[in-house]
Length: 623
Image (tube, rainbow, N blue to C red; front, top):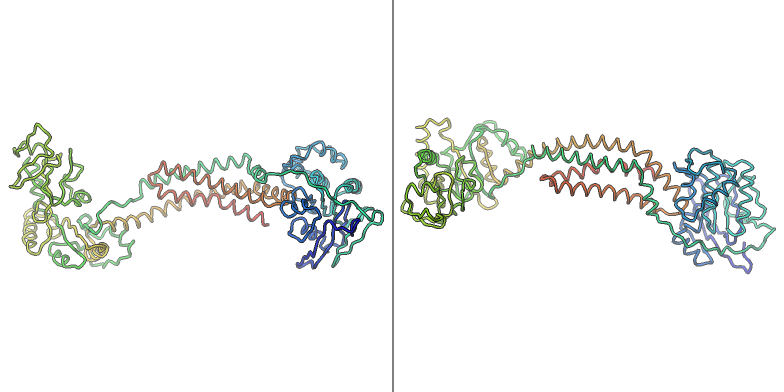
């Protein structure tokens, strides 16, 4: 079929469709002029497949006019109209269905065509799903006629139409064919078209021209210079009262769960206490391999012998421990000396104490004595290796320590036990806290082979005299491990003396980690149950709305020939959920001191809450 002058304006080259039902190879034909092209053939011959391949596919199709070629290659929205055999009819009004956000569609034109098809009595605000099959078919045809494109494709347009409606359709087609190219696929003998080109598909293509008009006018019509925002259409699919209700409920439920989680973390979550690296403190508290040590042992997977569960560090064990290659120094609590200090404080007598700075900073609470920074009235604590002192004002005044009390004592010097000290702090209680030196024992003794026997004998004698229940056991021992040997020292002591309690940087970290596993597991289970129920309820509520959205998207796709609406729809849903999630994380970050933990709960809750509906979108779209 050629135009006058032999120019072929629109040619389909080597179109091939191969599947289980259809085998069409290298089909070539053209629909180059205005008029009607009737695609015929038996059922299953591939009429619908050929039309849909032309309309939707990427094919070797040549247009004489570059503007039409450009539109076919980039955007067919206003180049083609397509009335599918099985159109989708979402839950939307007649006007919404026909106009499809196309601003060029006018109600007056719609009412005129509805009158011609004898359906003018249908209200434009009526849901199209409530109409009969014939009424839906007519509106599907009208919808695409009103799109006003140069090329119109109709696949079995007479389905569900009575004889009178077929005649109306034929008359409209013949009238429109004077300025448009109309391709009709049908096997309905009622649709008799006198002036048409017949393209018969049956294991190939046979083209028969109408004798009444051998030369037709070329379709040089250019579509209107219009554009439709796929994003705005996708956004309109999301807007609805249920969407706003679900978003509001999602935020409220996530906030409530976040508040509950935060309260539980504040009550139960363990934050590791600060400790100095490579230092292990052993003290007597539970006096049995108890719950504290069991949590640590479980976390690091240590084995504790059954016959060791009541074993504590004794004075006689210290020399053997000191010979360990992993230990640098050992500091021991001088029980006899501290008892003397307490007695002096009670008697308002001068008592001298010396504590290493790391003991003052990290372990003063284990001593149970008022020597830490929290007992400073002003100034600071003495530094190790210096002749500094922190002392109460009463002791200065009581013992006339050569200090001018009418001025600030801090910064003045005093002499105590024939040693000159610089006052750096004022203590609340009556004690003189001096700089620590390993050469002097003012409460904390540093182990030495030369002096340990005297230290041990003195303390054992003191405990026997005062009838201690645990005479042979040490109250407190501080082990300074060699660099990076803390865990070896800790685990070794734990296995040999599991009835002691321990404190160190690694102990605090591992203990908190293991303890928090149980806390977080319980909270996670509660969150999963609540958010799972909520997610399922939201899914049930949203299910029908999602189905309508997908139907609308499919309907828009057959009208606008683009997947961008679907992509924007997914992007809007994802963005909405992401904004909710980020907003909740921000609020949690501002309000919760445990946000470093609870943000994970928010992320998991958001996944459980939002992912099922998103997956359902994908499943329904591909169905």
